[in-house]
Length: 203
Image (cartoon, rainbow, N blue to C red):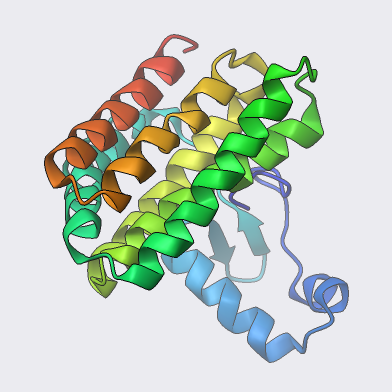
């Protein structure tokens, strides 16, 4: 749903998902209930369940919230990160650097690399949110990051700066690992701004 593997408007069948994932219908239905709360699916009585449409008009609202909360999360993560947290973030930083090296070696950007970049982007965001040790902030930002990623994926074949956008996380992770809260907050705000500008340029 988030990466648009199930396209907006497509039906979502709990039985089919349960079979594909090797799970019972009960946990799948519970997961679908959470996705509905996060506005990723919508259920209509007697019609079924469908992936929600991606509404570009929501871009401004999503960016407004993220502009306030992403810097807060980065700042909190910088101040609250434990030694284990920093090791985990360092692992993401190494993965970013490996992927940047692979891309710089002349690797063409195709669907596989786009998927890798999007997944890495989501993983880094969620790692930062987790390091805040603030469960309510983490849950809120995961929801908004999901909505932002859906918009991102809608335009992914027209975005020239996807690699650069994802690799911006390197400086952010370094600032958090070093405990530089002010720098981390500034970089997080710039990252959200860049996302909004990149999408608006294509609308």
